[in-house]
Image 1 (tube, rainbow, N blue to C red):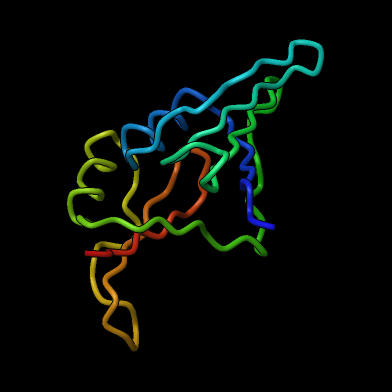
Image 2 (image 1 turned 90 degrees about the horizontal axis):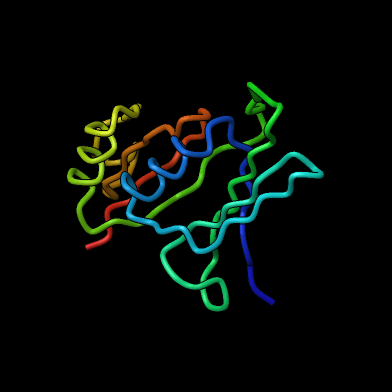
Length: 127
C-alpha cells in the first residue's frame, strides 16, 4: 500500500494551480470537469500518480468559501532552496506566513506559506 493523494477543496482553481505550479514547482497531471456534479478535479504534483503522492484540488463550482477547521495542520514540501521558494510564492502575491529559519528547538530550516484558500504549506529545506 501507499498514499495516493491528499484532497484539498479550493475556492479559486486558477489561483490554486498558479500557487502550486508556478509557486511550488508542481505541474498539472490531469484535470476533469464534472458538469452534472458542478465540480472540477485537478491533480498536481512533482511526478506521475503511478509513482508519487499527489494533491487533488477539488473545485466545487458553487462554493465561495471554506472553513479550514482546527484539526487540519499543514502539508509539507521539501525544497533545496527555501529562500527561492518563498520569493517565488511572494512574487506571485501569496503569503509567506513564517520566514525561513530554524525550527524551534531544532536546526531544520523551515518556512510556512499559505495557498489561496488558506491552507498552510510547510517548506522544509533539504539540500
